[in-house]
Image (cartoon, rainbow, N blue to C red; front, side, top):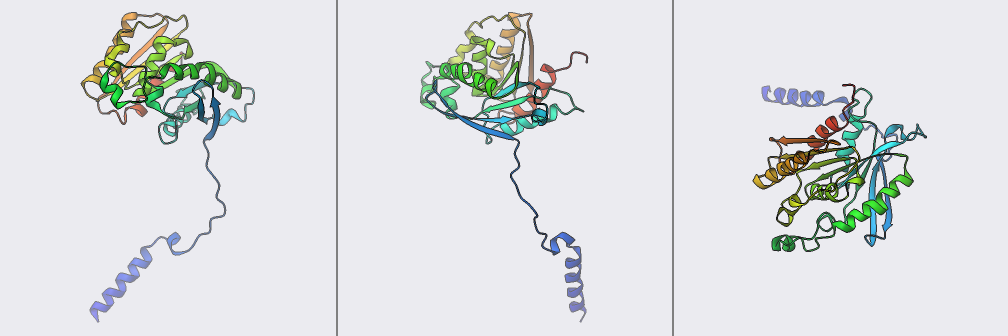
Length: 279
C-alpha cells in the first residue's frame, strides 16, 4: 500500500509540474515569413554568369523616402556565410541609443566560386593544385567597379561612402583592391587576410596612391605564425607609407581563431572607423 501511494504521488507531481501551456493545444493564429532584407539576381556580362546579392535595408529606409544611406559591401555575403550576423551588427550599431555607426545598407555578395574570384594568378605550384580555378580576381574587381556598384547606386538611395569587408581570401581580395584600385571604397575592413597567397607577393607590391580620405582596419586572430606575421606586415607596410589621408588600425584577437575572429573584428572596426568626431 505504501509503494502504491508513493507511485500515485510521483505521478501527481509530474502532472502538476508541467507548465500550463504544455497541457493544451494552443492554435497558431498566423504564420508569415520573417525577412531582414531582399535578394536580387542579375546577369553579369563581366563574369559571364548570373550573380546574387543579399540586401539589408535600414528600418527607416521605407519611411524616409528621400534619405540616402552609406553602403557596406560584404564579401562572402550569402546567408550561409557572413550576411546575417554582419547585418545584425549594422542594425545594432545604428540603434539610436548606440550610435556606433550611421544607418547603412549592407550588400552581401553571394559567392559562386570564391577561390576563382578572390585570388590573382599564382606561381606557387601548391596554390595551383589546391585552387584549380584560381586567378580571376581582376575580373571580379572589374565586376565590382563596372557592374555591382553602379547597380546598387541605381537601385537604392545611397551616399558616396562605401565600405568593404573581407575575411580570409576575401581579406586577400580587399587588400588587392586597396593596393590597386583604392578609389573603389572609402573604408577597408580586412580580417585574417590570406596574404600567404603566391608566396606573399602582394606584400611586395607598391600600393597605388589616392587623394581621398580612407580608413583601413586590419585584424587577425590566433591563427598561426604565417597568418599573424603577414597581417602585421601589411599593417607595418601601410604604416611606413605614412599617408596623412589614411586612418590606420590594427588589432590582434588573441582569444579568437580563423573561424571566429570576424564578428568581433568588424564590431571593433565599426567603433573605430565610424567614431563620432565629437567624442
